[in-house]
Image 1 (spheres, rainbow, N blue to C red):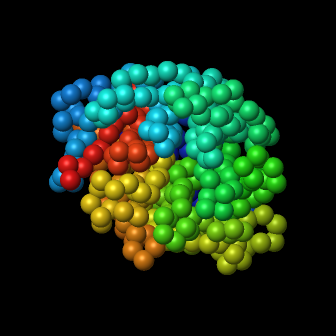
Image 2: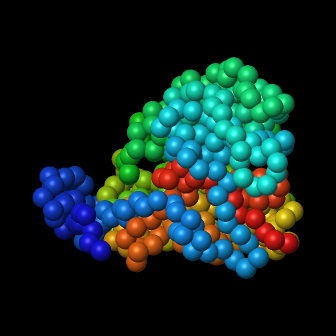
Length: 406
């Protein structure tokens, strides 16, 4: 297995910063003035490697691994590029296809764990995030938020636009949405870049608004790209997983688990991980790294760099063993900026006394052929009304179902 590209990032005293590709790409340079609190030497490396996509054959699916007592099957396939999920109290399954610009409805009319019908219920360019609140399905695109009434058969009324001026997408256009115990709307807005000062203060944030989209304000900032988030079922505290900065090497920046609180700054783009300084950028003006660190809220846990957490859901069903209740599940879509792939799995995030304590592998096996190939990149995740977990794969167009025999 050989990396497609290898990049080197380094500094030398008084010389600034150099980012170069050793395979013939143009050299990129950014001069950064040396300061007392900026390291005068640093050396990091980055790779580009994407395992080859192969079909989700029955043979490949049979070798997927889940804990004893669990079973993984196909809920639906030939779905295009399914991304985020929402499941109504009636058991109707909605998913977005950002590339097609659609929201689709899946039904399992005989309750056998396999969808038997599919229909497009909304057409919205770059539809991505979904949430159900007060009998309506909420849908986010890059710059808009819509709501649509859900009919008894699962079809939707005409989507009504609530917001039309979210920030431009840039590098991270995948907005997600949720409604908190406070009955307010929460929207994730990723950064436009890998690491840069944002001209729009709403980028790299979580926003909060009324359900009708009014009174929108920044809830938390310094979040490079927090897509998966949710409220602990018991404590009602908000947690999310933030994507680490690229081009800091195979093992940096690790993905972050943050407790998201109003008014907090989580450090991006200047501070990352357990208080490390980003060598590719420095605070503006007279602010030093140390001063920025003092006002940064650091993560509670970290996870292997470049794994790309996408979806997060707390398990609120009753079919899994009791020890799973109030733990969360996270989809790790998988790395591209790493010489040895990471992610390509679903993990369990264990909570004790309301706080995250550790990760455990839950659904594995999408990487095959000694990590040279993959047949699934998990994205969306939701708890079905029947107690199972549904997981989307936007590479092969499959939704997987994980159930428990108990």
